[in-house]
Amino acid sequence: MSFGSFDSGTSRPMVDINTTPLVDVMLVLLIIFLVTAPLMTQAIKVDLPQASAQPADAEPETVRLTLDANGALFWNDEAVAAADADPKSTLAALESRLQPMASADSRLEVQLSADRDTRYQRIAEVMATVKKAGVAKLGFVTMPTAE
Image 1 (cartoon, rainbow, N blue to C red):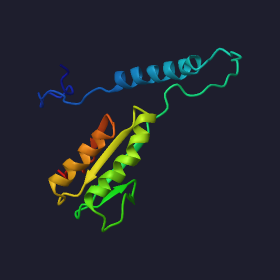
Image 2: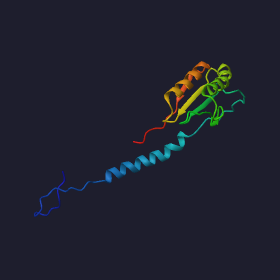
Image 3: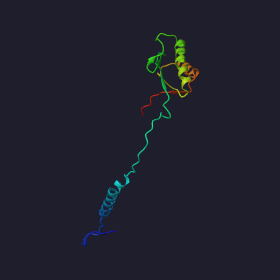
Image 4: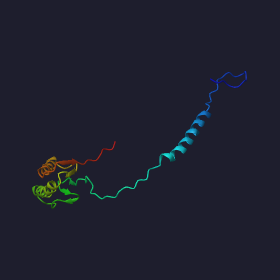
């Protein structure tokens, strides 16, 4: 511990930190990194062959189904049936649109979003129709809560 000056009147220890060694070490490290950084970016030049190929895994098709508060069903933002159509005919139209897609691609995904005021019975009917059409992946879209 270093003490103050040679004055005989004060005997308090000196509380200042000597930063000179810290600055010296930092400057040496800075110089080392500045010198070695360009050496690490060298690359070997290789003449690569050219080839064309289809991507291995294409993204599976996703269908967004939306149920509004009145129970109207929308397929990617367009109505599945007329607004005044019978719910059973709307479900039949949904099944007829989903079956060919599900048989063509087994990775078809359906995302279902429903208004909070939609009756659970209507949501269950749509889920059953999607399952009946042969779709294996059905997901629910929700909004995160604000915390």
